[in-house]
Image (cartoon, rainbow, N blue to C red; front, side, top):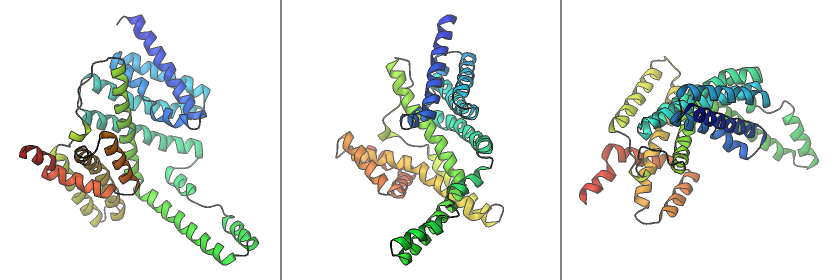
Length: 321
């Protein structure tokens, strides 16, 4: 590819990135998806183009979008795009495995998220993230008086008082859970951004007829066995650290348990998908999985993932054949 063509391609993808950032800021529904896929133009550039052109295009797109929306939104969006998209594009170009690509790019997304939380909340809201979360789940000072006034008008003050108490308890519980699980939620969100962009970028690359490292069906996905051993060791260490009082025990164990649940849920989903395909078509299998997730079966799916990884349920069945 000659230099002129590379520059034109970089300019075009930078323009697409600007449009996505602007759409994410101004368009209510479509903007959600635009924000999620902001790293995609950078992934394509890093895969096809020079690294220097990729970084320059990302920086220019960030500066232009900052002038159109707001400086902080443009800078934070650019951080997500570059820190997630550059490593993912380069790793896909080197034909690295899907798991390695998603994890390393997810770390980039995590760094971008930390930047957003540390800088963004301080600049935009004038407070740190903990204060912002507490404000989100704190009811207005006049809430109780306003609701009691409504109760008086409706001639049911006792029922209204009970409803107010339940609402305040619920908000306190939400505030507590968000502060407790915030580190784990941050990690999971970074990995989710990375995983979604990896899956979608592969579809785009296929349309563009770009060479890709072959990836097997999701029904055959499995972690290396050492992931299971390492996870159990980390849980034990987390418990010991909490027990010794180095870190709040409930904080560290809750976060590690949540991460443990999410990590093995992916393995469990792959195993469940494998078995469902034996009895129902692909669309039916996906529909059943979605329903199970919606009704709260995540912990059972995670348990299936643990057994599948440590015992090798699918491998044993294949050997029997």
